[in-house]
Length: 258
Image (cartoon, rainbow, N blue to C red; front, side, top):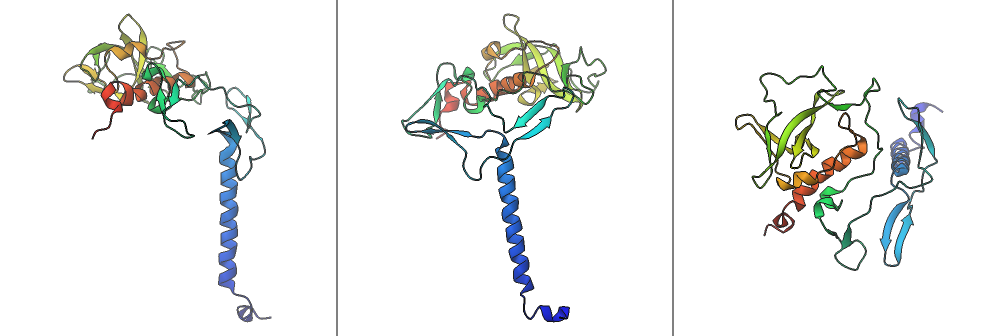
């Protein structure tokens, strides 16, 4: 049969669109299964307690990933769920899905903008196998450009205008040459980190301004096991603390504007 006559018996356009729809459905199904390698089976709070949910489509077959540098094997989805930290919050109403309100010090409750994940308690590594984020005293080939203000020695001012400490060191990213954290000495000599994205270095006034927390709250910021490197788990906790301050640093921040 000539090719030109084929169109008289078969609707090529309709077949094409159906092929596309079947392909698109399969693609969405495959992507939906693959994104269930993390966080599933999911915990769902029901009236009669916590229920583990898998949903549709079902979980994908386990796949083994080999981590760089260490060669460790990670199976996803794994047989056991990751451990979670104690949630210091309670629902504000007796129905599933009710918002959670922090219990005790909201800055340390680990909820809302202050929530964090229990990531690996190991430092993120550069392609050379060295810790990626380190202070300048370790990454000695990094320096502050002369035309930029050097925050070391500057006081840190909180959202209430009170001083929370003095900057002592700068932490840089070896893989992406930029500043990640500022190390400050809070009241009582406690050494804590401040994300560079959560502060503003004012070269004219010779001070570092932080809108996220008050001056006194720097003393409660998370500490590190070693001040020559920072682990993935410590990074999450540090950033979450300042993130929590955007809502819980002062009582009026948790209230509506109107």
